[in-house]
Length: 123
Image (cartoon, rainbow, N blue to C red):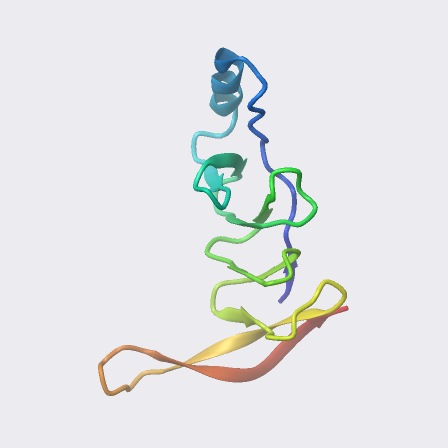
């Protein structure tokens, strides 16, 4: 199941006075997920139980994938639910997710991921 990254974030405008920025953060749900830019600064907030992902069309560069623990795809527009991975050929016009399979027995006792054959495509 391929998902699109949505710009549902509460943008934190650095040009606002300090008290107004704090008010904006207070208004955002107290369980919101803070999203950081590449330098580690919180630039947006996503709703509870969502995942921050890179978003090419957001003015902050961050957006929300509408499921928890999502896997962002390299195209900056799509994400996959937990337990799936983005197809290596993922691009803006065409991207898909494939289900991960886990082997219960490994040499070191940790699950080993095996690339699955289940594809969910979105054109």
